[in-house]
Length: 93
Image (cartoon, rainbow, N blue to C red; front, side, top):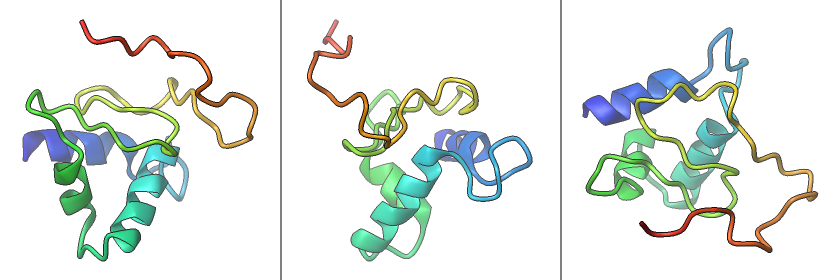
């Protein structure tokens, strides 16, 4: 639950993240509605791995580690410019 709280604090609406929160937060809200879940924590739990890293499916623009602040490294915008044509550096290690 601490990982969920950290993710929410880093991504939820605030003066720093804007009145709607980060792009990842908005996408998690959209997934919540699509999955017909009652709260965003259920979405985050569904997409959390065994190392407590929350990785939303394609479309979120980025994957956010729960202890990392969500500001500054929001590299994905849905402007249609980038895409996932390349490997993107997410190689299993």
